[in-house]
Image (tube, rainbow, N blue to C red; front, side):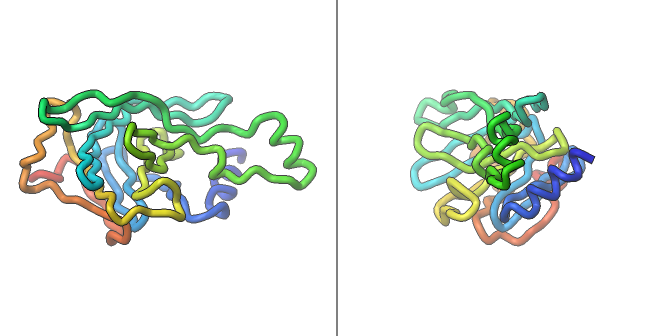
Length: 186
């Protein structure tokens, strides 16, 4: 019952993506991409070209967390840029007390985004423990038309091939669709 109420609150909270999908499926939305864990997502913005992989999911009493590793493409090839966690944090004791008094904490304020060195992308763990969601901007209401995302089937940075002609880049306003991640480059 707790998860059902949590999910309903999130649905009513705004236009974020809290979706479920089969484990090996990516979902393209007009605001972002739902990507399976352990698959690379390419990120393009102006001269910046990067890749991120979400490697593990953890749910504990502090919230939902997905650990990531981010890479930046340079003249020397792929360089690890940083690693960290995206998160949907649980309510603190103080927030729960305030909630009982009718002062509620917006769910979006409890999300820890994907922080790259050059910019930030709004991102959150999905509730199915198998995916993460990355948006085309720093928050759900401020999408950046210059950000392009490409889901890939690759599991290691050595596999990432920017010259692959079948790579498909998506941007804000993209048509919703489901993609079998293993069939992306077939």
